[in-house]
Amino acid sequence: MNYENLLYKTENGIATITVNRPDKLNALNKKTVEEIGSAIKLAETDSAVNAIIVTGAGPKSFVAGADISEFLGLTVEQGKALAQAGQNVFFAIENCTKPVVAAVNGFALGGGCELAMACHIRIASDNAKFGQPEVNLGLIAGYGGTQRLTQYIGKAKSMELHMTADMITAEQALQLGLVNYVTTPDALIAKCTELIEKIKTKSPKAVSGVIASINGFYKNGVDGFANEVNEFGKCFATEDFKEGTAAFLEKRKANFTGK
Ligand code: COA
Image: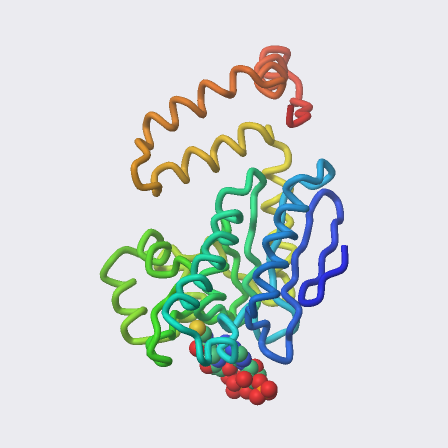
């Protein structure tokens, strides 16, 4: 698949989506956000894909935010529409039925931090920097940042980072629970792949159930426990459940099909 601002490749069941505007530190213009939405959809519906990695091109930046040059002259309504469009794409990432891992290879600022946070798991290189610097521009985060950063690191730290626009290092992000692992830039994709390879040995159906059930915790108006009951129940109708239990009882390795 050819995109204007993304690279898309699949290898060994992993679709890698690389935001590819390195001259602009991979800033998310409207087109790029749209393309991320369609690439996620493509990977989610491709039966040869088990998991997705999202990363940025070049050594310096994951994504340095929404493209500030597109903000000029927007009206209130246009501003709202921009945020809603971004949030819709990021919801599609968060609710993707396949695991989505952010390989954060540098600046993850504003919309970049928000993109990383929409992914299920974040692995950062030790040169990564996270932040929500929108107040520097007279703005606030609009792609879910005020909500997801608060979910990951708690209200007090989220307030501080959004209000001060401070950047934090990968190591600080690790301590705050914002990222799962920190590694060297050279080992970043290998670490993502290692984690994905482990997840790939599990039932894809059950992994989707984990995503839906954990996401239920954060959804307004959703009883997370009732949602879990529902997701748990759904497992019993899957081939993966039959295979997983049979394999255990027969003392062999399960061969999951994702059905
Ligand atoms: N939107 C549009 N362009 C951006 C951008 C963004 N969010 N972030 C970086 N760029 C562009 C710069 O304008 C510059 O383009 P140019 O070479 O055509 O002038 C290019 O990317 C390189 O950025 P530069 O600022 O020269 O790199 P740096 O190493 O000096 O600084 C940052 C890196 C990330 C600290 C700095 O680019 C920055 O603060 N970016 C904005 C971050 C932000 O506020 N994000 C939230 C947006 S809502």
